[in-house]
Image (cartoon, rainbow, N blue to C red; front, side, top):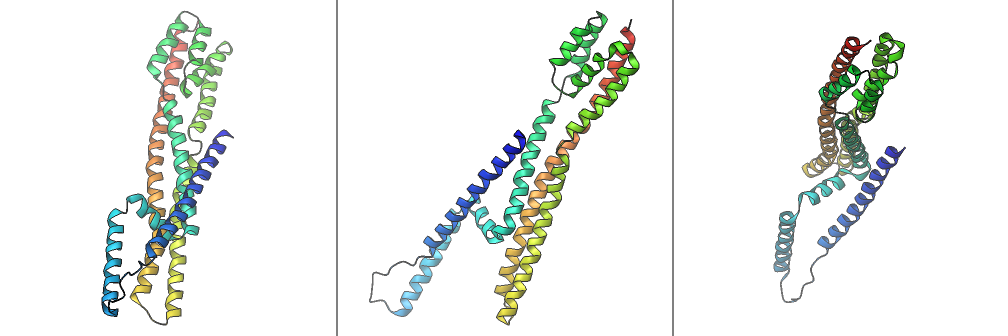
Length: 275
C-alpha cells in the first residue's frame, strides 16, 4: 500500500508541474505575440512593414538562441497534443518509478554468500544451530532467508530441509520478479500510444487538406510533424524502460544462480556435519 501511495504521489506532483508548465508556455507565447507599439508616425507603409518583419525575425532568432533543452521539450510536448502526450508521460513516470524500486530491491538483496556460508559452517560444526539461525536473521537478502527456513526444519531430517530450500527458493524468486510484468507492459504500451496518436494526427491532417481543397505543403508538413511527435516520445519512453528492464533481468538471473549454488553448498555443509 505504501508503494502504491508513493507512485500516486509522484504521478500527482508531476502532473501538477506539467499543468504549470503548459500555462507558463501559453503565457510566454502570448507575450511574444504582442506587437510592439510604434512611436514614429512619419514612416511609410513599406518601411513600417519592413521594420516589423525585421523585428519579428530578431525576436524569433533571440528566442531560438536562448531556448533551453527543457523549454524545447515543453514546446514539443504541447505541439504533440496534451491528450495524447500525457498517457505516454504517465507510462514513463510509473515505469521509471517501478524500475527504481526494483533496482533498489535487487541491489539490497545481494549478499556475500561465501562469507555467509563460512559463518554458518562454523556454527554447524560447533552444533550451534541457533547461532546459525541468528546469523541468517541478521543477514539481508533471499539467500539468508532460504538458509533460515532450512535450519528451522533441521530436526525433521535433511530431506525436509532440501524440500524447504526448493519451495522457499521459488517464493524468493517470485519476489525478485515482482513488478517486472508491469514494466514490460509500459514498454509495449508507450510506443503503441505513440502510434495511435500518430494515426489520429494523420487523419486530422487529411481532414485539414480536405477542408482547404488543396494539397498545400505547409498544411501537410505541419500536420505530419505534430502527428509524429507522439511516436517519437513513445519510442524514447520504451527505449529508456527497456534498458532498465534488461539490467534488472540480468541482476535477477545472477541472484537466482547464486541462490541455487549457495543452496547446494548449504546442503553439503549440513550433510558433512550432521551428527
